[in-house]
Amino acid sequence: MTPLILGLSGTRLTESERALFRAADPAGYILFKRNVVDRAQLRALTDELRAIAGRADLPILIDQEGGRVARMQPPVWPEFPRGELFDALYEIAPMSAIEAARANARAIGLTLAEVGITVDCLPLLDVRQPGAHDIIGDRALGAEPLRVAALGRAVIEGLRDAGVVGVVKHIPGHGRAMSDSHVELPVVDAPLDQLEIDLAPFIALKGAPMAMTAHVVYTAWDAQNCATLSPRIIHDIIRGRIGFDGLLMSDDLGMHALKGDFGDRAKGAIAAGCDVALHCSGDFAEMQACVAAVDDISPEACARLDRAMATIASPPKIPALASLIAARDALLAVV
Image 1: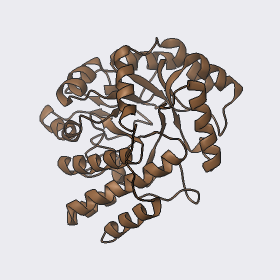
Image 2: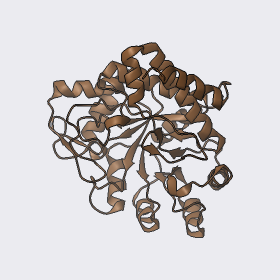
Image 3: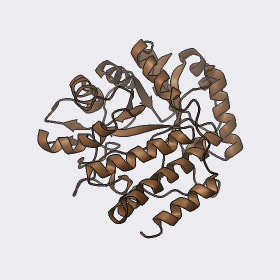
């Protein structure tokens, strides 16, 4: 197995993609709006990916947050609310906000599980900071760490109830960034005591099954490398200070925060301590470069992957989608 999560170019696999995926056996796949038409098409696509891998528990990821980050959209699928609405409800009624977040995550999970998607890149545990770039903005669950952790835990539990693994992001925190890592490399100069605020939700949820790194430089920890490429941040902060021992994936290798050849980007993320590197664009030449640059997945990373996927082996029965959405909307009505 190759320590990569790869995207694909369209709504069906090309022959070249099939050949590459069979040969490389990537750890998983990630889907975007370009890969999505309707339920039948999406289920057929995920079934084919599982057949190629020969793994029933294959991680097939998507970013289905709600709000402005939603790859599966109306009218085929429901529209889901942005994170800040749960934060607003928490201000009025904390327990109602937690229950609304759990119901919403269960509903998202049901829509994903129905079409064979097993992992959602949610929740964001980034603590929103005043004046920061709005790349996080209304996606965040709040500006208070314990509130973010409480709502984030409800999201992970709700997804798990529906048979979907959650991914906490963007570890060790993207909420202070003054620029968008899709466009350029953010540099955070906050001192160590302030960074403790960013770490707090991740520490509270250190038992999460999966996490995604931030392409952000934190000068107090490593002034030379962003978290994704920093052995010090991954080993001392993410694995050490936070105590996270789940599957650690990079953010997208194609983001402009990173520079250089795609093979070097993939190799650098794995060398720094990421269990798997994420390549999203579906660009075939870039995927080939990533595959050629990395060795087989490590035994430790493989064990973390197995543990993460085992968390959804036997999901409990939960209410129907319409009931979950109605319960969520009733709770959110006050905001």
